[in-house]
Image (cartoon, rainbow, N blue to C red; front, side, top):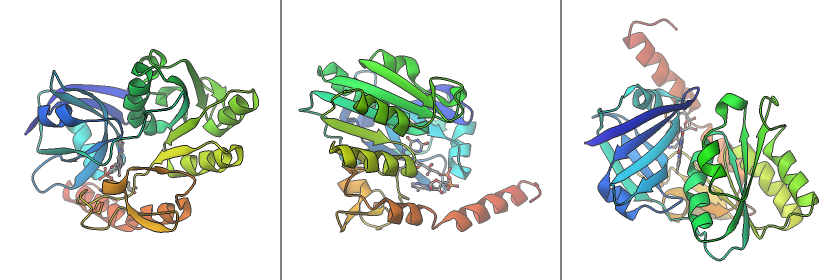
Length: 279
Ligand SMILES: Cc1cc2nc3c(=O)[nH]c(=O)nc-3n(C[C@H](O)[C@H](O)[C@H](O)COP(=O)(O)OP(=O)(O)OC[C@H]3O[C@@H](n4cnc5c(N)ncnc54)[C@H](O)[C@@H]3O)c2cc1C
Ligand code: FES
């Protein structure tokens, strides 16, 4: 059992939890994730390690409540326990050897980006960051990121904070104003990563993305997290989650992510009826 040491609401339906998990914290690296089960018999879901402290033995997760399991998790409070918390899983991000990197986070995708930004900043890499969000209320981790990067740019869809528009608008402006980056890292909704990669391909800037397909076992056995990269089959849980964004087949990945929508809705409806609700 894994104790929740701290819980914070970062944005509407977006929560941070600091979990006591010394073994995970000891081995964690930026880019890796955990798989948790909120309770006995519950679904296993993957969440990225958003921060970690090996000496104090804790790991932070930041999650958006999008379905049954993330909502069950969000109902737990400080002092409660999570049933299973397995990790670190996946390959650590390759972050060494760059001079100047632009990191682009969209929505909750800003959370997995944070340990990568911190790691590169501590190693002396020049890191610029773009955070994209629906509106001001959904901008997360602004202060910790600001203190670990050279320049922070913010874009909101409705213009309530930072520049009005998408992260790709800011990306284009930065490059066209003469900024030079030897690498770009983009994490966020699949469509955002696809559009960023389309642009960076035109500018010839290598780009890493973090894929978040449906995962079941997280060990390369079930095939659930299959993605096509350069025409070859890769498994995000063991070969990723980071991949060369210019080689990822985003259209196929987006189609696959919709595959279980009906089952998820049915599960939600069943639970609602069980609890005495109405459809
Ligand atoms: C490597 C990785 C890292 C992730 N990191 C984060 C993170 O840091 N924060 C965060 O908010 N979300 C993260 N996700 C997505 C998160 O796992 C899903 O939001 C969660 O599983 C939804 O479960 P649910 O039961 O609440 O919702 P459901 O109603 O079951 O599903 C809602 C949507 O979540 C996705 N999803 C559902 N089950 C899974 C699953 N087993 N594996 C992957 N995606 C699933 C699907 O797109 C689905 O349409 C990550 C996913 C992966 C693969
Ligand atoms: S989650 Fe089963 S192969 Fe990756």
